[in-house]
Length: 168
Image (tube, rainbow, N blue to C red):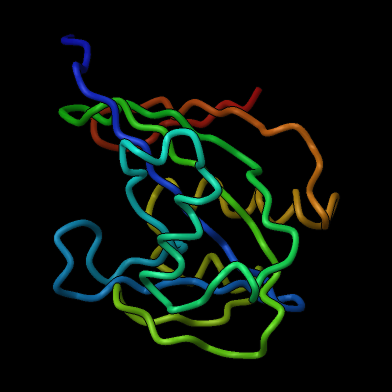
């Protein structure tokens, strides 16, 4: 097996309000994961490597128009490393925050929906999101203001599908 010679870094931000989470149903015309569900975020630009929180906030602003002023307790909770066959080595940075304004913002990437954790299984979640979001929900229940050590995980593949995720 050839080792990747590229590295990609992405943010994924999951906003909470009360007992619901803001999820993005990606637009049907998107090249990656059309119609599937995930959080807000995107690629970390090379100049943002020294400010990963800033990269997540930039993506939030670009996709919804929301700024850091609308958030409380923005926390990097988990990092998932994966090497999907034929793709670059990738790290996904999972942030959570509480949304302090009662809005359902417009989104340039698809449609946003407030979803209860009990309804997650009924959504066609992107595979990595399906593995991480339940962990994030538990993390926030355990430590609402963050402050815990960031958990590092590795996704192991069997063909194109994730076989398992192991967390440190």
